[in-house]
Image (cartoon, rainbow, N blue to C red; front, side, top):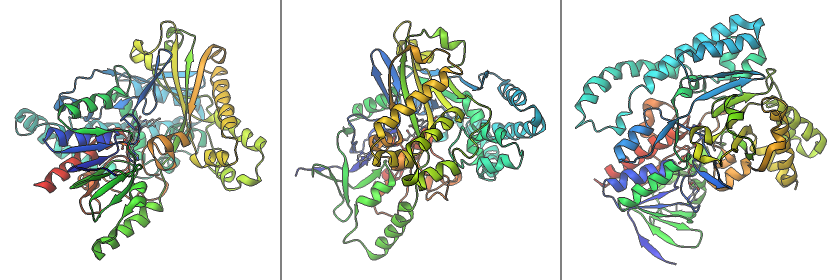
Length: 533
Ligand SMILES: Cc1cc2nc3c(=O)[nH]c(=O)nc-3n(C[C@H](O)[C@H](O)[C@H](O)COP(=O)(O)OP(=O)(O)OC[C@H]3O[C@@H](n4cnc5c(N)ncnc54)[C@H](O)[C@@H]3O)c2cc1C
C-alpha cells in the first residue's frame, strides 16, 4: 500500500470533476483528480476509427451562457463551431437554424396532423412562451464565469437589468415542472401528435426542460475536432496550473474517519476535502462511516437509503457507422444534428406498457415476441443522428461519411437479455433493424454502403462511466428526484450530509446535462475553497 498526502481529492474526471479541478488548481489549491478510465471526459468523449472521428457521449454541447464564458475565463482556446439541428418525420424534414424555425415546426406538425391544427396552435403558443423564458435564462453569460469586480460593464449593463427578468422566469419555469406527456395531454387528445413531440425526451421530462429544447436547438455548439476536445483542453489547463490527474484509478472505498479514499489496488489517498463527481449511489455504497458522530451517521444513512431507492434516467443505444458515401449525399437531407422519426404514428404503448410487460414477465416471453417488439420499436422511435464531419470536415476521410445513430433504450431490458445469454446476438438484431429502418426511409441504400459498424448499449454506458442503470443525464424523472431540482437553489446542490465531502455532476442536480455538470463542479470548487478559508 502506498500513501499520498493531498488536500482536495476529486473523484471522477467527467465535465463536473474537470471543472472543479480547473477552478481549484487555478486558485492555487493542491488538487488530485482520480479517474477510473484511461482518459478523462466521462460522458463527453470522442474516439477514432479508420480515419473517422465519432462522439461517444453528447453529440454537441449547449452553450447556455456557460461553455464559452467558462472557456474565456479559464483562457482555453477551443473553437466552438455552430451545430444546427434538423427535425424530420417520415419524408418531411425541416431545419431549425433560422428565426422562423418555430413556424417551420408548426408547419411540419400541421402537415402531419391536419385533423389537429387547433391543438398544434395551442402547443406552439406554449412553446413560444417557453422559448422567451429560455432566451432570458440563457440570454447573458452566466455570472459565475465573469469577473464581476473588474467587469463593471457586464455587471451594470447586462447582469443587473437581467436579474429582475430572471426572477420572474424562474417563477414561470417552476410552474412548468409537470411531465411533458401529461402537459401536452391537456392541449390535445391526439396521441400520435403528443408522442411525436414527447418521444424526443426522457420519460416524464419536466415540461420546461423538454420544450425549452426548441430554444436550445439554436444554442448547440460543436468543438472543432470532436466533443472530446473540450475535456482534453480542460485536462491541459489543470496540468498547467499544477493540478494532478491520475487516470486508471477506480475508487472503491471512502473512509470518512481517516479522511482517505482507497482505490481498487489498495492505494490510499488522504484528503482535507473530497469532491465526488461520479455516480452518487456508488459513493454511498462504498462509504465507510465507522467512528463518526451519531447524528452525522444518522443523516448519512438516511440519505443513503433515499438515494439507493432511486434509479438513473433513460439510457441510449448508439450505433457508429462508417459509410462509403460522400458528405453531399447527406447534407441535402439534414443538418449534422438530426432528430428523425420514421413514422408519424408515435410510440404509443410500445415504449410504456408493452415494454414494461416484456421486462416484468421476461421469463415467459419467447425470443420471437421480443424481436417483434423490437421491430415495432425501431420503426416508431425517434433517432438522434449526428454527422461529425458536417461541423468539421476533417472528421471523416475524403468521400466518406461517419454517422452516429442513437435511440433511447431501456437498461433493464438489455440487462435481462444479457442475463439470458443472448446479448451479442441481440445487439446484431438491433443494429440490423436500425439500419433497415433508416435505409427504408430517410437514407435509401444506406445499409449496402456501410464499411464498418459498432455499437454501445446501456450496459456499456453503465460500465464505462460507472453510471447507474446506464443513465446519461443523472436521476430518472419517473419518481421525485432526490437532489436539488430548483435553479434558485442550485448553489446548495454541491452540499452533502457527509463532513468535508461535496458532490458535483449530473447526480448532484436535476435536470442535468453538460451545463449543469459544469455549474455544480464550479459550486463544489467554491465550497471546497471556502471551507479551507
Ligand atoms: C449519448 C449521449 C447524449 C447526450 N446528450 C446531451 C446533450 O445533448 N446535452 C447535454 O447537456 N447533455 C447530454 N448528455 C449528458 C452529458 O454528457 C452528461 O450529463 C455529462 O457529461 C455528465 O458529466 P459528469 O461529469 O456529471 O459525469 P460523467 O461524465 O459520468 O463523469 C463521471 C466520471 O467519473 C468516473 N468514475 C465513476 N466512478 C468512479 C470511481 N469509483 N472512481 C473513479 N472514477 C469514477 C467515470 O469514469 C467518469 O469519467 C448526453 C450523454 C450521452 C451519453
